Every structure is written in C-alpha cells, then in structure tokens.
Length: 329
Image (cartoon, rainbow, N blue to C red; front, side):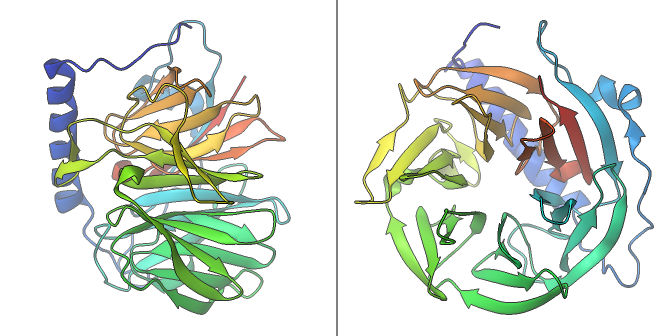
C-alpha cells in the first residue's frame, strides 16, 4: 500500500458534501427513537458470517483485514468498548438523533463471539456516545453530561454535568484514571478529576474534536474539521496532539487532510487507526501525517475499539444499526 493524501479537489469536496447531506437525511428518517422496553424488535443474536457481509466493504489490494462477524439489532450504535476484565463488549445506542434528549438511549452487552447478551443493559440515557472504563466504573458521553455507570450493578451511579457543553462525544482515561471527554461542537475538552468535571481546554484550533486517545504525556485528538454549515466541512480534519503539561496544541506531522474523523485507536506499531464517519473509511495514520486507507466502509463508521491481544477491531456502523468485528494483520 502506498501512503496517500486525500485530494482537495472540488469533486472530492462535493462528494463529501453529498455524503454529509445523506447522513443528515438518514438520521432524520431512520433513527427515530424506539423505546427499548416496548417496541424494539428482537435483535439478531447470531452474527452474520463474514462471507455474507464481505460485499458491503472492501480493502485495497494487498491488505489482509477480514471480517469475523457482523451483528445487527442495535439502535444507532455509536461506540464499542472492550472490558478485558469481564471479556465483554459494551455498545452505546443513541436510539434517536445525536442531540435529542429523549431518555431512550441505552447501553448493550455483547459477547466476543458476536451475540447480544443484554440489549438494554443500562437504560435511561439520552444520546450516549463514547465510553471509557476506570476499574468498575464506565464513563459515557451523553450530550452535556458525563454519565458514570456501576458496571457490576449495571446501573447509572452518577451524572457529571459539563457546564456549557454542547455535544460531548468521545471519552478516554489516562493511566491515573483521569477522564477526558471531547465537546465536538464547542471545540472543547472536559476533564474529570477528583469527582469534578471541569472545562480543561477550549480552542478553535481543535477543529471539532471527536475521537480521543490518552497517551503517557499527551492527548491525541481526531478532528472532524471546522464546520461551515451543519456537519459540512470545507477542509476535513486530521490528528492533533495536546500536551498534558501545558495544554499546547500541535498538529501531528504534516497535518495533511484526512477526513471527518471519528473513532481513534493505536495500531500497536506506533501508528493510529481512525474512521471517517462521513465517507465510511478506516485509515492508518502515521506520526508524520501520511496515511493509507485500510477499509472502505459504509457512511456512519463511528467510534472503534481495538482488542490488542486478539488483533481485532470493532467498528459500529451507526446508520445501519450494526457492529462489525475485523481481524487485523
């Protein structure tokens, strides 16, 4: 595979604008909330064989990524998180639009062999998105609240209000258990430390921060790109880094335009895996800013999770109500 840069041509920008418009229409028409306790259809608890689903995505020649299973039955799944202590996956279901406070959002539990263990494991959320775990506590971004879940009991234990937040999106925790959560529409990052959630950083140069990854001395940020009209961007985003010590923001590498970035994970080899929500892509981004496309997916490819021990990548397809598991090289 050769390292590429996404073209900045009018044709490319028009394609992305059309994809954004389609995404808005899909959300408006297909993500109507369904109350999980009353009318949610029974989920498909058996994963679709990889051969049956292979036609829906493609990988460039020479890649060895293959789909292991595909599981349907979710309601706008935005994020997947692996719990290594319990060998289970958590999936956040928006069950509505990403900004609607309807109380119908919920979390699901899924087995590693691709079966839904508990579709409505934790209920009463609004539009739950990114998740992070610290011990027995699961933290979930929910519009303007960071929800804390007691994992053993499967209940909401606390709600941390993010004053002034507009669209909390992804969460991550550092080695000290400090939790960071991005506010995509506010160009901000909040931090939960000593049970207090405060605004940690707000700067337009964050360019609609979405995915977060806490490293030893810095926070890696997957930027959507500065929005011009609705979710549309004239210049899509790339990766940035924020120093924990002094909060200085820097562009990773060349700052080459990548896409409307959403999910972010390390690849285990010093690079990063990121999804483009709008076009439906999985990229590998290098520290020098260059990148390559690993998978062409469907629009709505959201907050991914990598299981290092298995070399797996979990990708929620928000617009399709589906989660796919892939085997990485």
